[in-house]
Amino acid sequence: FMVYSSPPPIHQELITSMLLLLLTALTTTLSCHHMRPQDATFAWDSLNILKAMAPTPSQPCQHYQPLLPFPDTLLHTNQPQQAAAIARHILDNLFAILSSHSIPQHWDAKARHDLLNNLHHYSHHLEQCMSANRTLTKKQGPRNLMLSINKYFRRIRDFLHTQSHSACAWDHVRLEARACFQRVDTLIRQMKSRAAPAPP
Image (tube, rainbow, N blue to C red; front, side, top):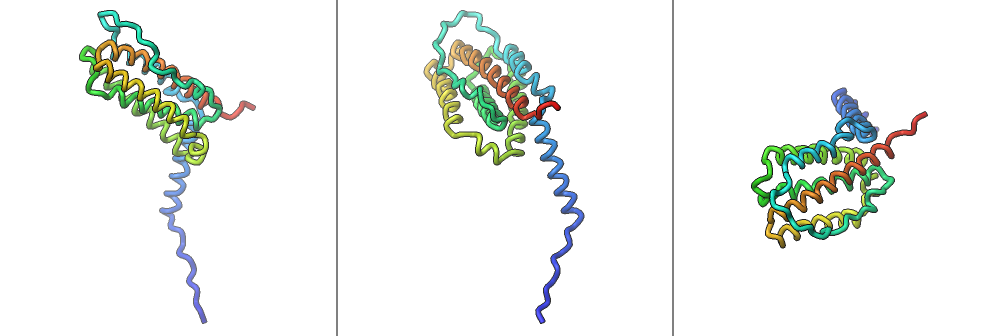
């Protein structure tokens, strides 16, 4: 006779671990679908830190033409996960540029550290939102959208290089960063309002 052994019993530790993972995912999803205090104030806080970090130059700078019009059509997405992906891509590019060692000496080092820290933490929050809905993110994050954002920030880096990373060039980048924070705020509000369930 052939004897079949019964499958091993599921350990209590495994059940506990699975429940914890499920609870963590649920908590993350809820935080991504509802406006937190940090979501409402992130852009405003970042703008204030940016102002403290990069004061207006004492010598007037010439007005440069826009480096490259930002693809504003990205701001009108009706998909929460796409909005999260776009916002995170903007923040990651800003972090890379503002981490440069060629920033003006008159910029405040502590404020810069605070701003980079703020960018990093919020980008991490958005990454968690995307991880909790990985399938949706893949479907709603067209590659061409990210490429258009990359092109915009590549033009900023090329502009800095062409202008030898001058103080006036960095001041123009400061203005671009300010506009980017306003765009991120729009994306955050769309992400939360679209994801939140309709009131009864």
